[in-house]
Image (tube, rainbow, N blue to C red; front, side, top):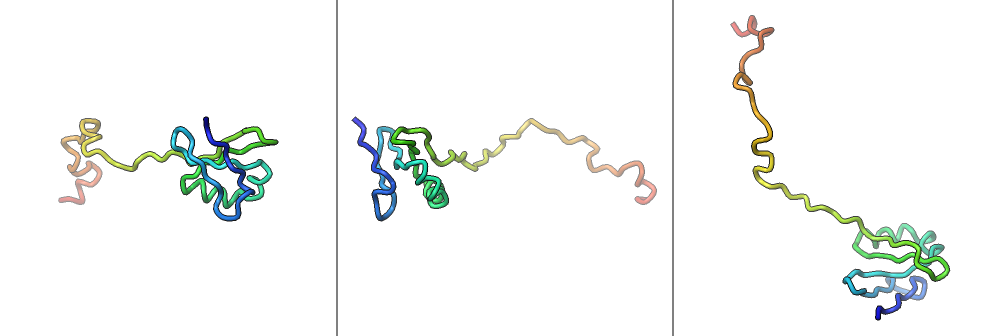
Length: 100
């Protein structure tokens, strides 16, 4: 049985946290309260917290951080996908008179 989330407005410090089955930290917050404190809630979401938004006690939405893809590069990931012409560094026809 999952623990019941504590409402956001019932606390005096940071928003209440509960751990659900999938190890996601979630706080329950009413729609009006979410609208009123949106900027502070977005800061907490950016830090990794998830909010369950309710309307009249029924869950209607979940606000969670966007999953970020790692910014890593693999050496050689573009190998064989491009080519350089043999005359790449040869002078252009239009500029031959300047090269002499």
